[in-house]
Length: 318
Length: 281
Image 1 (spheres, helix red, strand yellow):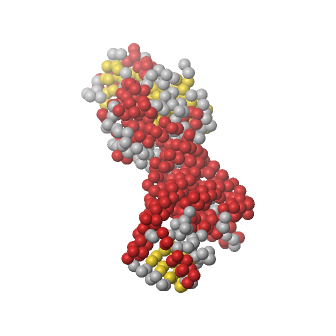
Image 2 (cartoon, rainbow over the protein chains, first blue to last red):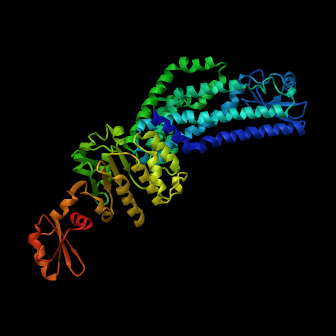
C-alpha cells in the first residue's frame, strides 16, 4: 500500500505542472467572462451571460445586445433566435435561470480538461521513463511493476480530476463572491446564478468514482500502449485504433470495438451525466443498464494492466 | 562462509547470440568482487539476471532467493546502481530521498543527508541541474544509505573524471563496506578498483574466463621481464601473453612455478589490467 501511495506522490511531483495548467487556464477564461460581464453591466447597455433556458431544452449562451433585445444561441444547432419575452423577463428580474445542469456544466468543464490531460498523461508516462532510462532506477526499488502501473492508473483517474475539481470549486466560490460584490442583489438569482456550492461536489464525485470502473479499459489501453510502444506512443495508439476499426469494418461490417472504446471514454461519461436527471438515474445507467459492458470493460482492463506490468518486467528498454 | 551469490550454468540468449553462456560463479559474504569484461561480454546481462530484471536459464540464488520470483523481497536487501545517468532528472534530491525512504524499508534518510553533507549537492537541487559527478555522488548516497547485504554497481564511475572516481571508491570503502556486506562491481577502469577487490572474475562472450581470489593471483600468475637474449627461452615456457616493456619484453605465465622462470629475468605479479588483456587476447 505504501508503495502505491508513494507512487501517487511521485506522479504528483512529476506532473504538478500538467495537473495545474489546464484547470488554471479554464479559471482564467471564467474570470475573463466575469470581467467582461461586469464591464458590460457597468459601461454598456449590452450584456453577455451564460445560462440554461428554463425549458431545459438547449440554450447555452445568451447575449443581450441592449436592455430590450435578447439573442439566444441554440446549443444543438448553433442557430440564434430572439428569446421569448417571458424568459427575458425572468433574466431581468433575477428569477431562476439555472437548472441542476448549471452545477454540472461548470465543474464538468474542469473535469473534461482534467481527463483530457489524464489521457495524455496515460499514453506517455510509461514510455517517458523508458526513454530517459529512469526506469532502471525505479526498478532498483522494492516496488513491483504491477504496483507501479496501478499507481499510474489511479493517478490518471483521480489525480487530475481531484485537482481540477478543487480548482473549479475555488473558482466558483471566488466568482460567486465577486458576483455578490459587483452586481446589485436584484440581478442575482436566489442562489447566485443557479449554482449551489454543495451540489458542485456531488456530480464530480459520482463522475470520478464511476470513471474508476467505467473508463478502466480506455485508461488501461493508453497505459498499455505507453509501456509497449517503442516510439511515439500517441501515434501508435491512433494507428492501433484505426487499424482495428478498419479490419472490423472490412471483415464484419461492424464497429463494435470503436463503439466500445468510445462508450468507455470519460467524455461519454460526462455526456451521460449531462443527460441524467438525477444521480440515481446516472448510477443505474452504468451499474444496472450497462452492467454487462461494465464487467466486460473491467475484464479487458485487468488483462491490459496485467500485460502492461508484464512489459515493464520483461521489455523495458527502447 | 555463507554464499551471497550462487550462479550455476546461467545462459541467456538474445536472437542467435548468447549473452551468457554457462556462466557460473560463487560469491561469499564480506567480499568485493570485480566483474570485468570487454564491451558486449555479458556483464550487464549478468547483473540484470542477478537483480531479477531479466530471466535466464540455469540455477541462480542471490541471498538464498530466486531473483525473479522473489524479486521484491530481494530488493529490500540489495542496493543496485545500474548506471550513472538514470536518476529521474525532474526530481529534486529531497524528493528522491523522501520517495526512497517511503518505499524502501532499509533506507536511512538521515544517513543519506549526512553523506550528501560532505558533497556540494544540496537537497533542493534538481537532478537535472547537477553535474555528472554530483549525480553519481547522489546515487551513491542513496545506495550506501540502504542497509543492504549486497551492493551491486554496474559501471558506477563511467564518464567521471579521475578525481570523482578516486573519491567514489574511497567513500565506498570508508562509508559503506564492512565484513557483513558484499559488493559486486563491474567496470572498465580496472586499475582503479584493483586495490579494493578481494575477488576477480573475467567474463568474455558470456563465459567465465578467470575466477579467483586476489590473494591467489600471485600464486598462479607471474610476469617475466626479459632482455633480448632470453626472449626465445621465455617463449618456450608457453606464456599466455607477451607484450612490449621499456627496453624489454614482458611475458605472462599461468600456473608455471616461479622457480622455473627465475634466472631468465625479473619476476613480478601481473597487474589486473595486464592480466585482463592477457586473458582476453
